[in-house]
Length: 391
Ligand SMILES: Cc1cc2nc3c(=O)[nH]c(=O)nc-3n(C[C@H](O)[C@H](O)[C@H](O)COP(=O)(O)OP(=O)(O)OC[C@H]3O[C@@H](n4cnc5c(N)ncnc54)[C@H](O)[C@@H]3O)c2cc1C
Image 1: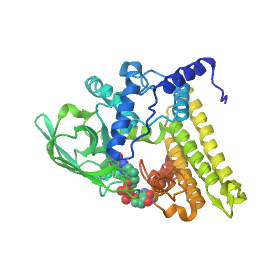
Image 2 (image 1 turned 45 degrees about the vertical axis):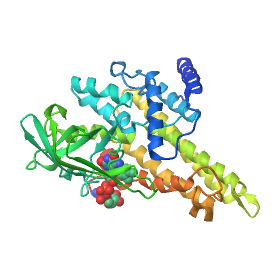
Image 3 (image 1 turned 90 degrees about the horizontal axis):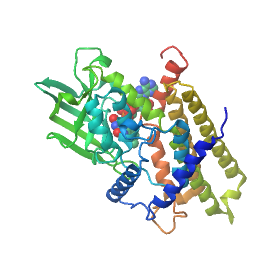
């Protein structure tokens, strides 16, 4: 494995760097959710206009057709420039890639450009109150009626539904079939009559996910993706992208998270000494540094496999399990460094840093739950990667 980049990729790096230096917004992201949403949406539009949104997507779909190496460099440069995130995360990460594989030409033309430009924001309506890990047991029904499906049921934990224009929705279309075989994958307009969104307050204090109720919502049949009752197979494409596709960017986020913790260790003093000088804390930070770097090297390995033409498969679960558990562990070190300060309101003048480590710690728990909990990832690794017998 050669971890150096070739000249052409380094030239690409320079192009990205120059653009980011001139264009990353100077004003910081507003702290209120509404303001932050508009800010990230405007940023995505700017990236789109310059051809940087979805750079790894094929040119035919408005992307740049970037190579895997260019994608890696692009993520590194975004992190270096401290660029804000883009607003349409689920559209970019999972909806676009799913439609490119399974959508009709009409669906691709209609939706993909608007995903890239953040003109239409997407959410993912998979989980239900009684169907999370056992997703295939979902109960939301879609019944055929003339040219439409009529959808009735409830979804939960639907991130961004409160700002979304569109939703990828898993529905049961054949209640008699075995549970994995009676599911269909629909594209639903969130502004349709009968859709109600109720935000849920999270442990962090934010309210980015929601309950979504569908009461006899009419969805035209051309909004079906793939074949009727073949939705499970399509959902697997979506989940593979959700678990695996972003790992290069995620590694960079982990590095940034670690830098914030190290910065805090330099600022918080105990017995007159900064904690960065404490031998026990130094050991832990060194261990965290190693784990974050192992993630980087693992990413290079997956990239090498992909360059050799091997598609990402259930191994995506390994990445997801590794980084989410690592971040939870790392954020606990952050809390240990803060000590009693961790209990304070991060907006208070007594809180020792400008970085809100309390939020990062609370949020890190969510990462071990969404896109499949750690226990579920372990089951997938055991059964589908290692070939162990089912438990
Ligand atoms: C921040 C956040 C954002 C989310 N966003 C979305 C979204 O946008 N769209 C969406 O559809 N969903 C979303 N989810 C939901 C998420 O996918 C589910 O929470 C997750 O799949 C777990 O389902 P559950 O909450 O029903 O827990 P359950 O499935 O009820 O699990 C409860 C516990 O039992 C364990 N468990 C369950 N089955 C097994 C098993 N077979 N073996 C071992 N242990 C098991 C689980 O690991 C867990 O610890 C989000 C969740 C979070 C936290």
